[in-house]
Length: 374
Image 1 (tube, rainbow, N blue to C red):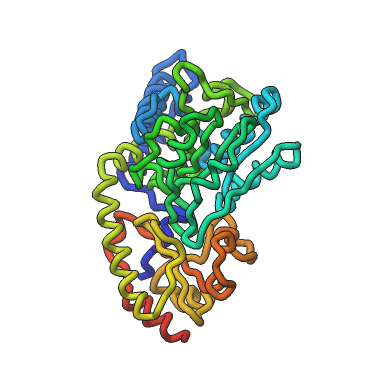
Image 2 (spheres, rainbow, N blue to C red):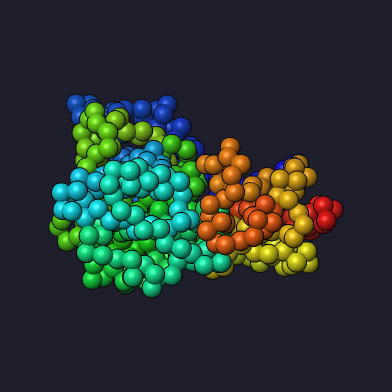
């Protein structure tokens, strides 16, 4: 039986969450916008409970949470939704990094075609942003800084706490794509200096198609976001459309379970990672990234092509060699290129990712198969 080790791409739904989703689809199927009968009222209560469960993960207020289809949509709302404010106030400068997810880079690129000026921060060979470079890039007209928490390909953790400190005396909005960390890595996201946080349910053992954007108020002032599409007044007018109550309820429960268990999950994941790294060192593997998430390891073995290795590993483990969102593309990883890795190292990169549900990583078998390719 193949062992699933591609949790950075997506996670299985926790049975408790799946049971709740089923219940909300089959038994308590009301529309949360229907206020004239008990079915709608029950659905509304489920949504508001989930809103509080999501908010609690980062110590936000539940009124600061809007539900979306996932982090891609959340990222787009956070970035494109600031356009009107930026243009009105002549603050058309954005700072981001070269290793962001495409759902951040592409909306920013769109704004660049509309006259916005963008600074793309470099990262070092370990995938880390230099906070001094960020500080030097900031201007009076900087409106938005968008930096992910944990990279989806390498697991590199960005210094969010230091970034927040640098921004303590600047008015620019800070957006953090937390798709790979929300709920699972319980550090730094509760910093009140973070204005926007994007999350995806399917990275946290909830169904696909649900996520959230957390929009913190500054005192009593709401962020000046505007909707990027129209058709209803749901979610403060920022995300029109009938709410997916079953998915929302499931996401909320997944957040509650994660918050209660995150520390334990991290310890378990770190143990699996240490064992795999010890085995790979016998092959003189190079680890792509440093200060990385306990849930993922990106590595290259000199002389081994990742495509060949993944084919040989089929039936043993399910792994990947990059972002699931760009798996149809054969262009080299923009993340690894930004880190300055050699072409051989990039071509050989393999991403292995797991969760608290992973009981065993067959390190010996993985190494034996890769060794056969040398």
